[in-house]
Length: 457
Image 1 (tube, rainbow, N blue to C red):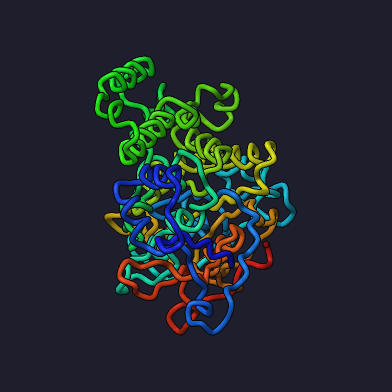
Image 2: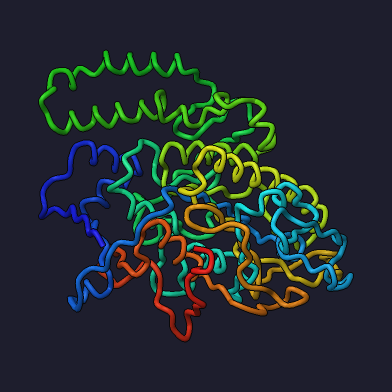
């Protein structure tokens, strides 16, 4: 593994690097000087072996679609048409896909036409039924309740990709709101927080927080910049001062994000109207277009937190009838568009919630036909970035209540994603107090593993 050390002992960082880190958050500069920047493998850290070879990266960018609240698996991507009315509820239709033997729930006709581009994991499991704890498991791979608050996948990408990614847009972007279920940056600190865009990409103007100011035109922003430059008498007089030079470079970079190439990424009016229609003129569909544009800008990790959520204890079937067609349209269009542009092979897409929903419908008050939290077995969709399409991994039982074959655990899924992105998942993480911490935990009696998803990698 290439350690890429840039510690204080190895010389000063470049001005461009200082500016870039500073833009990533208020604590970015402090973090850059206070933490080791080169993750080590466990063997190398202990001095027992040379650093492991860095895995080859197939995925240059990752898009995570997080169905927070947990989407029902047997109503969607793991249908059980023979399970009986207590399990089926109002959804009985099952449709074929363009891959023989793979069927989906009837609310996903567009994804059914794209099944050759993705694979389904139908045996995902962790057994945790709490929103926060299950989300922590699925987005860090670590068991909740420990001494350390581990960073999410996106924050880990920010750490490991920071030497190769030089874009103005932060390396970890969330559309549009961070969930706050846990601290996404964990002990890595505020320099690794996600950049949450806010705003609504389906609005007339996508008002990205910190980039597009509500009610202020680009011309007015430019006029403000020019006025600020005229008033900067100290900077003009002390032009040779390194600190002021750095501040001016940071200001220039910030304006490039606000008025230049960085801002253009979020300008959906640059897209053809018919393509935007294909994605769907709803928030999720337009978020998917933004995600594709961020991939084209080279951003390493993008999260779409599904607007509205899937916590369907009650009104389950009505919510599914409203949201599944939007998920179907936006995700199918994203996969097709990435493929048509030659980007799918280098862009990994994964879609799941923190768990599934109970296979048996709860008709008791106050739920009256809802589905409850269910971490025993659920489904995940993965595509691109080194994952093969047209495959199914694992299986649930005949009623979707438990894993029937090939259990897949969080460390297996996340380890596979890291591997395809060229990140050593056995590497250590820099803890501010020097505590021992690793990207993923080793399998043990408590941390279960079924192995990497080699059957589709």
